[in-house]
Image (cartoon, rainbow, N blue to C red; front, side):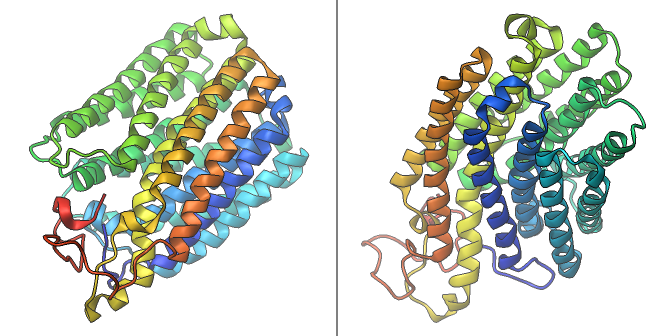
Length: 452
């Protein structure tokens, strides 16, 4: 998937900068899991546990999604980026605010939260401005565009709630209860990140898997279910409603995610490219983690899971399944397509007109290393989840060290991609007989185009 840079589109280095920040945040989050595992087992709302959550949510997942959105917006919604300069300013503000928030939570210094929260809020506001003005240019409101627009709305609500909480923690305006924290978390994870990944999937799955004959009617109807259920759930949490009024929207939200999984499975069945690559295996494992997240979430809502393990352990496992399981595996899988694409644009697109052998995206990383890293990380995530539920520190240390091995393998591949070490050079060895050269793999998405 190689997109020639054009006027109004973010330069590849801008999006790569967001990904580099996301990679550093992922490494830091995994290191904190190793160093502060005992703290996480004691309670998920201790200052360092909250710092870990913001490392993962704002630093790893959100940074990666923003970077990908800036580069892919023209492909996903057929519209050019509104302002590259504002995107650069947004990145600086958001990065500074995020670091300040993590540092404040880490040391338990709540009086500095409003300043850092305001900086991060300004960065997100600029992102929403750039993305919102870009969306005004959309000519076709397909399923992908609708989900992404809804995700941006959820992001606005998420950061507004978080910004308000920083003042509440510092000045004591109102108690930040566990249910209000759950409100903030579900807006961010199910709303902002969940809806955005769904929207991206309705564009990238057909593109990468060559899906034909898939209808968007189910996706569009399901979006209304997801939005309604999410708004009802956060309203019930905000009002501290009785448990039945929380269980009902939780069931509806779970049904919406289940429908998306069914729709994604339909796209896999309709694909023309039958061979499953590394991208597909990440999505499969991510889907499995999402199923477990749905089950854990319903267990939390009904009280069944908390009665078995206790609220702190159940909540920690539920959050880890969503962040460390589903979202991390999905972002990792997409990055094996997006980061090589960005690097290809930066390093090889200017040489494309000179002729020679086309660099294929799957040649830009080590596939054996990627497969080993995926296996290690998935095993580590499964063990870590079990350890959080059981309250076992030795088991947790085993899981997080396996996860770290997977993260290091994954990041080594990303560095390898950005350094251009695996990529064959233009003018290098010719293809085997019968293979066709394609100077722009984005234009002709045939199975032999190299987009794997």
